Image (tube, rainbow, N blue to C red; front, side, top):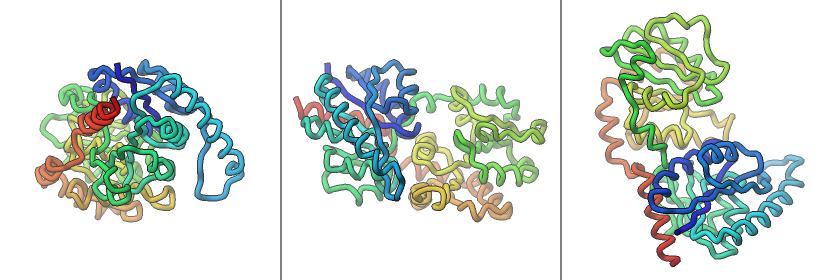
Length: 357
């Protein structure tokens, strides 16, 4: 039986694509193990899906000054030693890394033990953790065509990002019943993210009276972000967050409004949902969401608005355009090379492990 070690953590975005690969890897007969940090979000997420989990020390590598810059390199060194010990014991055929700082010692230990490594880069430009890992990688899976220019020649493969299979099998009727919506009026799904995007929430609520004349609105507004003054508006329903119902809500949606995190927009692409992206501003991030959104706009999948341009007079015409020309956006998505990521990535894993044996 072939054995694979998955790694990645720090945020859910560094873990959920790994979870999306599990059913196919199991179908292909892999013995699957996971290395993450002792107490990161990945520990809970992976233990919930019954994969053996190994914790290691983890430190963040920063481009800016922080007192922890003095202690974290020692944590990384400790994590490297622990990862090396685990890998020597497990003897995997391949390591698949989704990035995040916990992955760096795992990838470097795999390189020194001559274990093939495949890494996945979600964003347009590689983050610091993946930049450090590039030299150890046999192959690098990319989410965007533009990313391939940042990767050493011969290593980059355009795969897109793996999304959970269950999202593709939503039940439109179940969502209609859950929301109490009419079947003959189009639906907009607003995704504020698990933390809730205040700018997105405020912009949508500010145009609700106009929006509800033509559309029904499902609003995933984030924990603690419900608006109690809008609970009785016909055609509008809010949720802090949803789990198993998300697939059904996607099935019902004609148009989506979302942040531009890599995993979120890959779900929109896989589900062929015309969308308005409102990326996190460069002041609040390293600017990757802006680049992600621009790529999707250039490929004809999305419309993009910055947080500074969320005036009602601008948003409403864009939503109308997305709905009226939705067939054009779907046609562009159908031609994308970023689809069917699970098959592409597992084929790469098979190729690498076959070459090893």
